[in-house]
Structures are given as structure tokens and as C-alpha cells.
Image (cartoon, rainbow, N blue to C red; front, top):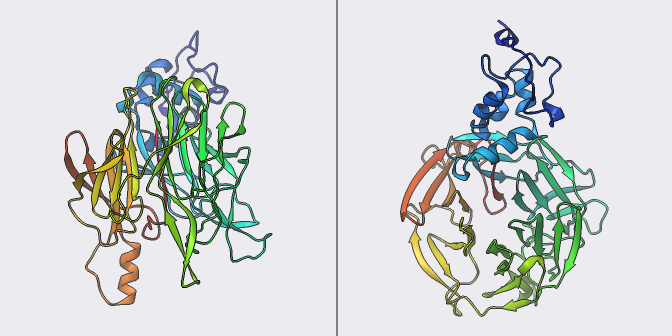
Amino acid sequence: MEVNDLWVMSPPLSSPPFSSDEEFQSENLTLTLIPGLPDDLAALILSFVPFSHHNRLRSTCKLWKNFFSSKTLISIRRKHLHSSHLSHLLCIFSDDPTISSPYLFDPQNLAWCQLPPLPCNPHVYGLCNFTSISHDSHLYVLGGSLFDTRSFPLDRPSPSSSAFRFDFTTQGWESLSPMLSPRGSFACASIPKSDRIIVAGGGSRHTMFGAAGSRMSSVEMYDIATDEWTALDGLPRFRAGCVGFMVGNEADNKEFWVMGGYGESRTVLGVFPVDEYYRDAVVMDLKNGGVGKWRELGDMWEEGERRRLGRIAVIEDINGGSPSVFMLDKSDIFRYDMASNCWKYETSIPKKLTDESSTGFIALDGELHVMGSINGGDTTDNNWKSRQQKRSASLFFQIYHPQKKVWRTLVNKPPFPQSLDFKTAVLCTIRI
């Protein structure tokens, strides 16, 4: 029996709930989303399906395909679903997103969803150190470092100013106005309750060349409504490889924080470039929709305490207060105390990972996720078996709840053909 044979006939709605969404219009308005139910109720029921399952449901029939690809679905979910019931998804860019598709992972339902790759530019390749950030129902990919076949020399990376946006309703990428300054390895944050994104610092650092490349201090803001970038006051010093986050979400107390990173590099024995890492942070006031001057904070740790800032994860305060900022330093997690401008020990991960340099660390749905790869069997000296194990590596999640002070673990088989390298993978989260 064909799928359409299962549909029942009913009079058309006098006021269709999707009349404003042309994508959802059907040639035959007598068909209903769910047999025996009015479309408005059926749409509400379908909107409760986790977002990670939508791709599989699109193939059910034409009406479902149109509904799960419509703006109506997103608006219903945001209007009727509590924040805790929205899908909190982890987005993983395992490699150059122009050739390797990013994936969404739903830890709650253990489901993966593949996204299409970025539009390919035949002149550039090897995109890395870009920043991915979410805002509303969109995913943004900004800047990065890459190789350009039109530049010389070919063995040195170039910073990118490109900006792309993925629309979850159309399931497609679109190109945005490029940034005023090309940059990679930079701080970035979405300003709460405002259609604006701010970026700061960066340079042309590439994973293949360590300390090679440029550094910069420029800062700019993107207006989503007008698709325009505006230059702001630059950072007090050149700073790349830094982390950015917002503090406060009310109009009168918003601040953009930039932590860590590195400045000018020095050479060892006049040959090997070595980065000079910062131990401080700088803050810009964004009160009442405006922009202010930067203020500098002192060092966050003493000389010799640690060399550089570890991986950072920020848990937002749903009540609009200061977020909780955490740092993963090898196997220990520290919490940042804004009042004393220092890091305080929080906890240690229960199981140490074999490769601490290739560890993912991100905040998702109020919890800290520490990620690493584990093989399916014992290690062996046999090269063929080692390659097989590398391809079959699973993701091992150690998840910490800061309020409950408890850990839990999760193991899942990812869809990537090779084991994830978190030294180069780009992570972000989206709530949709």
C-alpha cells in the first residue's frame, strides 16, 4: 500500500495554520498531516519529535516533507516547547567543511544528523581554525585559515574573511557579506537578545605550521538583519587563538569577554617559532546596544602555574546572570571566579584519556561534555589491525553536571570514516 493511501479526506480548514508559509502549501488541501486530526493539532504533535529525527521523517510523504522543511515547524517548536524540551545538539566539523560534511549529534536520543558541506571554492582548500556559532535557527561558519592557489607562496596559509550561514528550515548554506578583516583562530560570541555577532583578534595560524602566520587586534560586529560588518575599537594588543563569550543578557549589563590566546611569537635558537601566550583577559562593555572601550584584567594565574589557557566551556545562566566559565586543563576542570580573577579547582574527569591533547570540551544543556576517542579492542602492533581500530573508534563522553556535582558516561559510534581529532575539529552547539 502506498503511503498516500493511508491519508483520509477531510474538509479544508477555514483558517489553515500554515497559510503564511508557502513551502507548506499543498496542491490538495483535503489531505491532512495525520489522518483523523486537524492540521493545527497534527502540526503541534509532530513538532514534539526531536529535531535529529526530522530527516528520516521527511521521506514519509510529500506533506511531511514540506512540513519538516518549513519555517512553521521552527516557530511552533520555539513557541510551544519549553527550552528544556528543545533539541540541544552538538555540531561537529571533523575536517574542511567544503569537503567533509558536518554532523549534528543528539546526546539525548543518541541520533546523528548529517548536514550538507559548505559551498566549494575551487581556488581554496584545507579550511581550518574557523569559528562556528549558532544564533536562533541558524548556524554560522566564519573565517578560518586556508591555502589559496592564487597566492604565493603556496606552502603558507592565508586568513579567510568568508562568512556562511546554514538555514535549518531550507537545509541549505548561503554566503554572507565577508568580514572586513580576514581572520582565523579568533574570539567570537553571539550577543543575547540582539541580532548581532561580534568577533575579535585572530590571524592566519594553520594547524600545519604551529606559530607561523600573522596576529591581529581588530574587532568587528555583524548585523544579521542588514548583513553588514562594522569595525569596533581594536583589542589593546595583538591576540589570536583566544576565546570569547558574553556576560549578561540585559541591555544595561552586556559585556564581551576575550580570554587567553597568544601574541607575538619568539624563536628558539633563532629557528623554531614559539608562541607567547597571554595569562590575562580583556572586557568590552556593550551596554544599551552601544559599544564601549576595552578594559584590561590582570593575570588569571601566576608565572609557572600553567603555560596557557586550556579548553574553555561556558554554561549560560538562564536567569540572565553571569555565566559559569570552565577550563579543562589536562584531566582537571577549573571554574573561573570573576570576583577574584582566578581559576579554582572544580573536579577531575573520572577516566583519563590516552591523548589529552585530542580532547573535546564543550557545554551542552547545562552540562560539561569531555569527549575523546576509544578503540573497540585492545591495542596491537599489527599495522593493519591498528588502522581497523582507528576507523572503528567510538566517541567516549564523560559528562559533568556542575550543580549536582555528578558524572555520567556515554559511548556512541560516530558516522565519521576516521577517528575524530579534537585538536583540529571545530565544535559548537545549537538549540532548536
